[in-house]
Amino acid sequence: MTQFADNARSATRALRDLFPETPLQRNDHLSARYGAEIWLKREDLTPVRSYKLRGAFTAMRKVRVAHPDQRQFVCASAGNHAQGVAYACRHFGVRGTIFMPVTTPQQKIDKTRTFGGDAVEIVLTGDYFDQTLAAAQAWCAAQGAHFLAPFDDPDVIEGQASVGVELLEQLGRAPDLVVLPVGGGGLASGVTTYLRAAAPLTDFRFVEPQGGASLRAALEAKRPVALPRVNSFVDGAAVAKLGDLPFAMLDWVAPAKVHLAAEDRICITMLEMLNVEGIVLEPAGALAVDVLPELAEEIRGKTVVCITSGGNFDFERLPEVKERAQRYSGLKKYFILRMPQRPGALREFLMMLGPDDDIARFEYLKKSARNFGSVLIGIETKRAENFPRLMEVMDGAGLKYRDITGDEALAEFLI
Image (cartoon, rainbow, N blue to C red; front, side, top):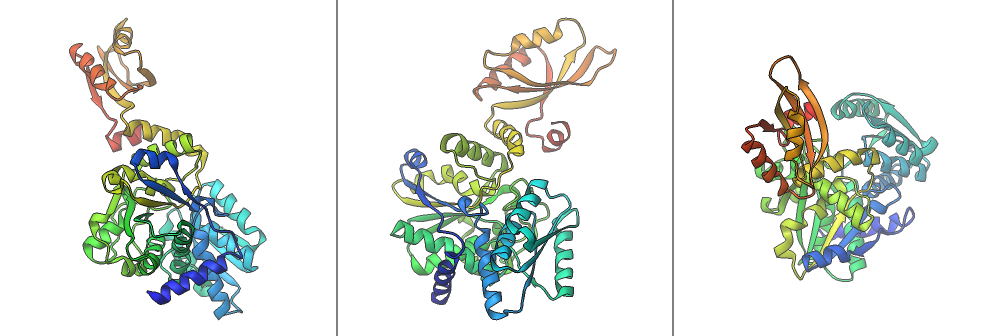
């Protein structure tokens, strides 16, 4: 661990050629809420708005030192890793070929091209990331280029460890707890390995998206395993399989220290940080803050550092984030209602709504000459406790309805 710590400090010094340390900010809002000192390590404020630049730069720098003639680098990514590699390529004056899925949003493609400029070529191939990765690795082998893995690489992990080096120097003392988001494991393995050597009394908690719990699965199986299905909403951390090297560095973690964050709950955290603090976080960047309610009792009176890992949020997704947040908090529900096909039936239903209730969606799913028709109706309210009252009124009126808010299949198809 001592050698790793020395290497991490060396990587941190080298990074100063690229960008200054990211801020470590005490957050008064969260500190007051939890009766603790809550600090945010703002990785959303790097030049590419995520910590991924650290690992890409460090790995590229070390390859260039060992092999000065290597001027061609390759990666496969649809997000932050691609942007970090592009930025590093331009800095070092080398060529980068970045493979991205055909389905990558144009905004991410444009940002990668902006960061890399003439130094990078973007290749769009494959509908799914596994196809993109296979194409990138095959092209890399044929061209004799160097492949930059997003997390399963010792030099990348060493670069991500610089987050831990900075936060310890900035805080001036060891924090009681560091909360880390987990995707492929590069950030978590790097930071914890450094801090276990430099601040052995510091404890850790890890947060994964509920639909991409690759660390929890690996710890339980005692080896990295591929998840059968991944929810891609938290795209910066939705990884089907933890990296082999990160797992070897994290196998000491107790499964109880790994928390799972519901994708819809993360949306509430994102909106709160945006509306209250003016901080733009992508879903993965909000993970460490999102878990604080679960840690409330144990962090009271303690010093806690949450790593906000990224802020690459496309505001075209804001309506979806708001929708998910409302549904999770119980402020919005969707029903399939069996509506009588007669004059006045709709007015009677509207009279059942309370003063805080509003119709956000109304659509006939089946209308015929029969006595009843099916209606999809979405209702927003200001307080979650209004819905039990509304359903009680509907029950009393003999209306037949089905709450489909939590039905993932139906919601995906109809909403």
